[in-house]
Image (tube, rainbow, N blue to C red):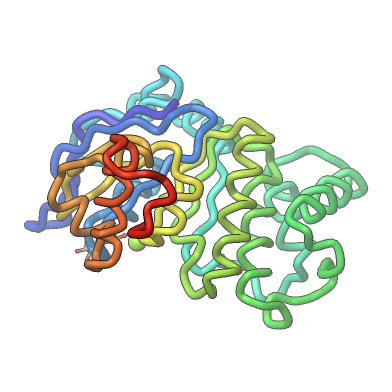
Length: 265
Ligand SMILES: Nc1ncnc2c1ncn2[C@@H]1O[C@H](COP(=O)(O)OP(=O)(O)O)[C@@H](O)[C@H]1O
Ligand SMILES: [Mg+2]
């Protein structure tokens, strides 16, 4: 579990994160959602140690990251996998070399074992045939999968994915979401996905943190969203009248006010 407590972060005069407390549940797919500019990426960068918050605590399974020694923080960082916005692959390296890179940097494994491990995770993301290709030769969805393979190659305990669906078509987005969910479950990773994709919220979001203008506006499960009366959250999630109607129907159905086969559904 990752707990964030009273995180504040400003850049110069501009306050970006205003006293944020939230929980990323262990072994679950946690989602951070919110409009563009609401502070999702800055919060995530604080959580992984790329930014230092001005105040607050970030607790990884009872260890406060902000009061660790440099060595302890280094060790923690090796348990964190990250899929960056835009995948951030090395263009001059093959797919396989990209995935081997963290092992080259941080493991003492032999070349043979590093290659074996890289091939294993490339299998996991269904990229068996693309080992020798360069990033420029593969599709956007495949690049994301390489990014995911690279993020999990060191067997992380924690995984962060910033906008894994940006720039992908809806079907590919769904596949990437499913892959992230499967990996989370299979390897019991505590995953945090930053997204503004509403399909992801409903499909893979076990636990959801909604950010609005640098504050945590709401936190709960995807089921809770259906019943939430938080106006800002509702306006964000159910942006169209159509979805708003669908939500109301669903609530009536759950309460038994209308039948499942009601023609209005
Ligand atoms: N390194 C930085 N320096 C100054 N301002 C920044 C920096 N990074 C982000 N911001 C500002 O912080 C706010 C939140 O940004 P961000 O976390 O990237 O939003 P989101 O990921 O929700 O779209 C924005 O107003 C952005 O301009
Ligand atoms: Mg962002």
